[in-house]
Length: 267
Image (cartoon, rainbow, N blue to C red; front, side, top):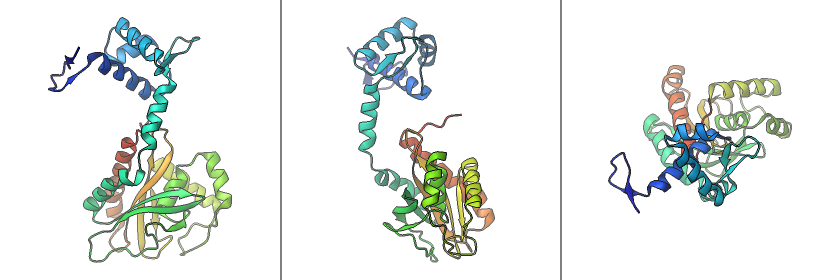
């Protein structure tokens, strides 16, 4: 039997399904186990209703109960379905509209990159419509050093400490300009700063006269999946512009893609 949602939406929904989905979403947001009373409070339903719906979800493997604490958490079936949906997502096609947005808002070249064996690999790029565009080594399909590029440093900062410890010894911290970080200790200090501030800056470290601001894109597990960046000639991307416009926009667009991939920022 179909019932209209209380919000007055025109489309009809099955009330029990809507309530069950609300429970799954609450469990997903928690990231752990919840007591029945806490769960009922979060979804705004009676204890008896939540208990009945949870019983059905457990029968089908979408929820499970810890027999020691009696708290509820997501079941393996929820993970299987979520993982299947995510595996069908192509980060390049998902990020393409956001690359366009970045170019439209900043009128600078936008890049999408991933990390592979300590190197940054550019998988998509949209150029600025400025008469003077940035001339840099990065092109779709090209590889580059991670230690002196905005995207590369953002991706290094997105690694866990163990992953970073395993990756750095394999990297060749070759100098490209007099601004390139070649000291591992200074690079680690830069990575810590990026983690705190949420963005990476390449100010002529790979290419003279080129500035790049990048931010990490995270998936539903919180892992650094890719990085999005805006690049421009340093003559055009001055310090005031970087701080007031570029950094906020790049971080905002990266956060939007991450949210699209299911990432939920924990406080």
